[in-house]
Length: 159
Image (cartoon, rainbow, N blue to C red; front, side):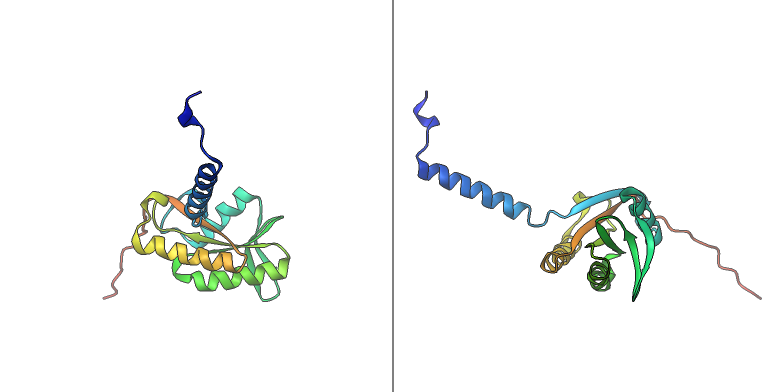
């Protein structure tokens, strides 16, 4: 065998440590993401219904103090847009406590896919995930497959 193929135990240890550290750092913001064939401007209820169908859950399950957006055998999910993440995290905590299930905050992204997240949007999701992890809440990011679609209604003027 070639002598360079063998490394000292210390070198192997350093290599393994560095590899483990690199993997843990790169996975630090490894939220789960799902993509749906929905417009980025779609109503929250559309996202809730699609997630419930995918995860085979009930929607709008009433509990004391609220309604769980999606309840599955494992998860109590709150679906929320990024600008309302504060409320969503609190609701996920409440729903988890009330149901005995893992709390999940499903954040509806505006970008079409994780590769299109830039600057402040990515930073905001990283901050939200950090707080979710600290509170034992799973975070899922929901991405649209279609660009923003608006329903423009003609404005009627009464003369």
